[in-house]
Amino acid sequence: MSRYTAFTDNNVFANPAINLVGNKIYEEIIKQFPAADLATTFVVTGKTSRIAQNEATGDAPNLAFITSDADVFSHLSKNAKAFFSPESLVFLKNTLQFKKYGFFFEIHLDTAISITSVLQDGLYLHETSKIPSNIL
Image (cartoon, rainbow, N blue to C red; front, side, top):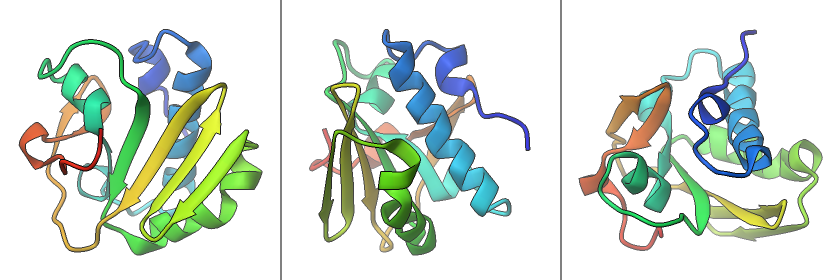
């Protein structure tokens, strides 16, 4: 398996540890779901996506992802503690939130949508006009 390095390659966050977690999330999906089309299955959303597409400025309060694939969400949710050794871990109905290195990561499940994304420097970014208003 080739390594996913888009977060570290692009220095998405000033803290390199946060970028490594972003890479690790994608590596796990690629490993467990090799046929998944990441552009339509699992993308960066929220303010991080907006900043990367020059639609917002400032710092992102978290690294948020959205998936339309219940199996991907279930796999990450069931294994989050083992994969990431988080400082805290919260499960809501369709959201997994964990804290690592003092930073929050979120994974949102929405099976009712068709994800549209922009591929930029190896990052799968949620099209800004499609980002749900409840995701910062």
